[in-house]
Length: 78
Image (cartoon, rainbow, N blue to C red; front, side, top):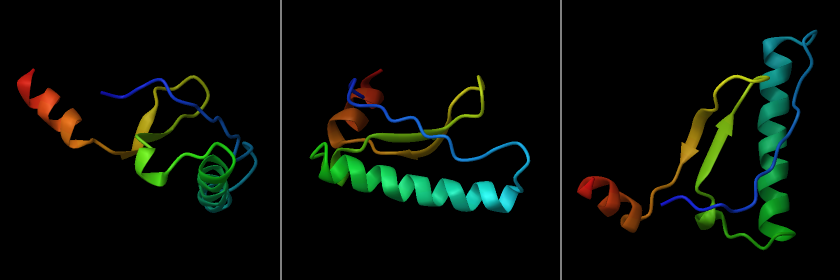
């Protein structure tokens, strides 16, 4: 099951920017956030469980989900 580990929030764009600029900013920000988490917070990349995107107060949209074998087994039992 997903834990309550550290959460990072990044602002990657402004309303006047193009979709391409915001997309490029998102890719750069994600790379920087993962680098920060793995170096400064000593989190192995294998421990990253979820990456989501959200605009304003919208629901979070999953970009990446990692399910361990224990998570998969637990979800099959439900």
